[in-house]
Length: 494
Image (cartoon, rainbow, N blue to C red):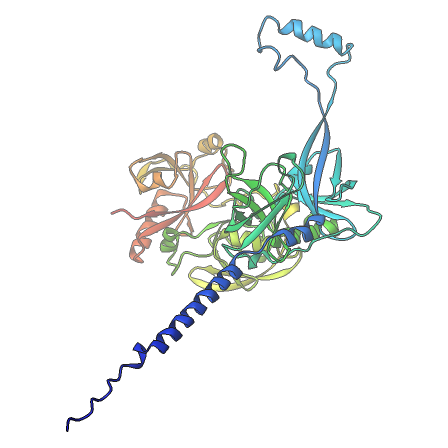
């Protein structure tokens, strides 16, 4: 009798039921992914735009300007018809001369309080005789100028309304990340209220101002957008649209908005005082570059190197030329730009601790800050008191790619150098050497080498030898040109 055939078993994953189950799961997963994909698509910006639009305003300014005094633009200058057209204009003016005409300009702004404070750019309203604010509803109100800050290009206006106004709040611009979505609103090219969207392209951009802190965005910004707000997705103002980079005057996706953290401080001061009140340390400074750090024996290229200490808070506190400011009010100083902004943001009259490196040692000095606005244009360079002995014959010598000679009274008069200044005059620069590449030119005056005063060629040679003996690869020179000082590090050539 033959044995019964045994039923063949197959693996579970090959069973029809398993395959059907797997197919069902894959189908469900695909549907779920599609749903998630739809949910991930950006929502419409319409609700946000509707919410913040009532706080954005168009600004129209008008200014009386002088009429033309001649036939410019009608006939070429020097043309034989020039006198004829001038007489024709005089007859039309009834002998009263050119008539003044009214010029108008357009810009944008935004309301920051229900009682009618409006922020815009200074260049939008600068020199205006009349400022007219148009709201999203079509209502128009005349504005009064509260104050301006040309350094950050910010202006604060005020309107009187019969009822509370819709307004927006400032957000934290430091929280804006590159890649975050933003909305720009304003009055581009006079077309009326307009919304554009983009992302934060870059942070901490500087254009030309001392206190610049711009957010770069690719949201469309054109002429007329100036003074308008840059919003984050929470409807907070993180910037004031100020400038564009463009070869043709139109948007190419490179716009700049002054960061709200800067604007808010300015606005608060304009609201309280009608002007800005920035802290003032009273030093001239330059960045500590790698070669300067090497010449001074510093571990890293950071901090702010003091090149001059004119009359002011720093001199009264005991800061000196050649000190490297490492920290200000407990905050490490990365470079001169960071220091200037931090000092400017500090209260006038505040006592702050300034940590400096002097002669290789760290020390902390207390300084009572003055006011920047009162000091502008008043600070003069400190002068050196050491002078070469009378009767010393002028000599010349070539050192480090420079032809140098001691400063004489005749040279002082020729170069416009203060009579108390002593040093070595650069009479020639070898264009193949490092000194020329770093900007030294004939007429420059070297007053210090290795942070020691030099009034003779022998003194400079001593400083060169001392730097070599200390194992330094370069020597730090304090160079003055037209009274302005700066430090330059030059390699020590054998």
